[in-house]
Image 1 (tube, rainbow, N blue to C red):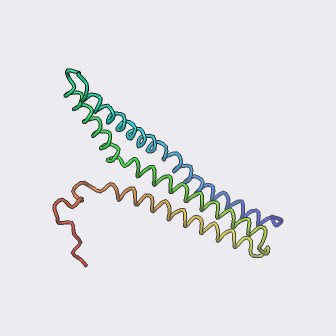
Image 2 (tube, rainbow, N blue to C red):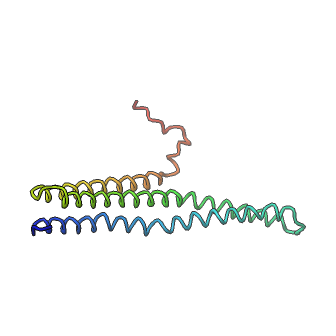
Length: 171
C-alpha cells in the first residue's frame, strides 16, 4: 500500500465490506442461537416425555390415564410448536447464510491480498473495487435467498392444496 490512493481505496472498501458483510454475518450468528436452543429443547423434551409413557403405562398409579393424556398433549404441543415456528429451518438457514457470508468475506480478503502482492500498481485499485462489488453482490444474493426461504415457509394454511384447486393450469 505504498500509494496513498491505493490505501484509500482499500480502507474504504474494507469499511464497506465490514459494514455490509460483517454486520450481516453478526446478525445471522446472533439470530441462529435461539432457534437452535428452541429446536434442541423441544427435541429433548419430546424424548424425555416419550420415555415416561411406558413407565407410567406399566405402573400402578391410579390416575395414569390422565397422566398419559397430559404427556401425549405435551409431546404433541412441543412438536407442533417447534414445527409451526420452523425452529430447525430457521437455525439451519441462518447458520448456512452466516457460513456463506464468511466465505464471501474470506474470498474478498484473498482478492485484496492478491491485488496488493501480485498485481501491478495500476491494476490494484480496480481489482479491489471489482472484488468489493462482487462480494457485495454475493452478499445480497445470499441474504435474499435466505429471506425468500423464510417467507416461502410462512404460507397460509389455505395454500396447502387441501381444496384441490391450487394446481397451476397455465402450463
